[in-house]
Length: 178
Image (cartoon, rainbow, N blue to C red; front, top):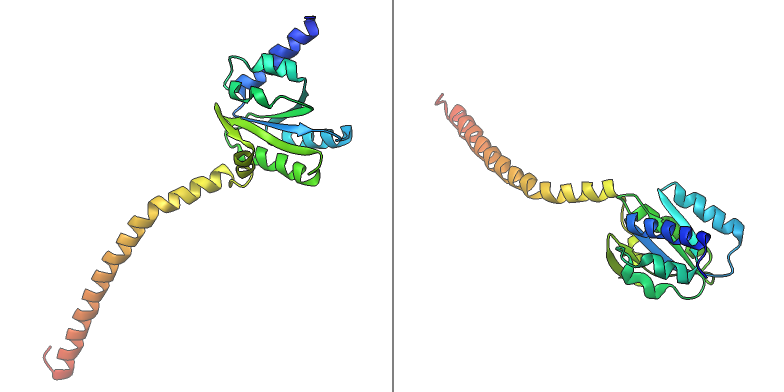
């Protein structure tokens, strides 16, 4: 039976699925309300929302969104983390830190990263990603390395040339030929 509350819940979920940069779906059973509240608080700090969802409503809400590929994950007791930040690493890390504390109760099933479905193993790897500024610095270092190496080679040639001129000048001074 369609009620106004269910319709509102579907619309709210659809908005979350449509706007999230990262969507993590996990089996959630036997976790206390206090633990879920701690998870929500931690995730809020990295611009991520966590919800326990009803599977039938989630399957309806996901239709027509970037997360449609994840609709088969909604079986059994399921929780969904919606990350809205451009940097998805911290959201995944916070979630997996919590999951490590409750390995029997929380298990990642998969997710969607900017419209692309990823399996549970790939979702786990997201938690190991460095923060975006660190990744950018690493990439910049890779771009700068060839130029830095070329500069070192060119400086080496100029330095050797100067050493040769200095040695010739000292040799001539020693021979008395200024």
